Image (cartoon, rainbow, N blue to C red):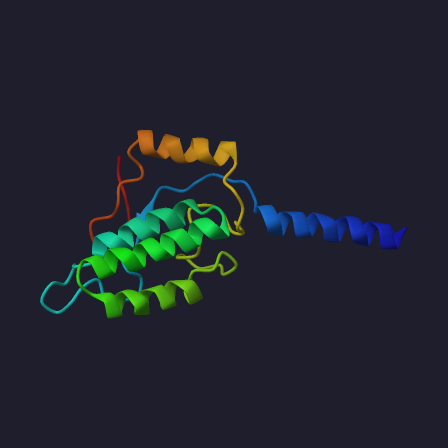
Length: 151
């Protein structure tokens, strides 16, 4: 019987890890480019919009493929402003530091309570994201400071 209980418990934990935990979506916040510069000395916010868009994708979370797509879009956006080397460095940073498994403020799926691992967004989660959009709670922050957006 103990073995059966252990198997059921481990199966439940594995399912939880695979699907994440449902909860309420927090309002979108962006810290800009996290601990990375947001531009050059001459143009201090040159790629800030790239980071904010990237944060928006990370706020929502979803599958591992969606995270990879968001990271590649960040690289493409930074390269498009003429900083290909910076783009590659940023890509390396987000691939290492943005895992859904880390309980950080910039992890994949940070808008949801931790843990929120890689999984397709549920209908309930998609509805919550849509409600934030309609309420204006998803506008990007205007600066690198971590600011909650206002409707």
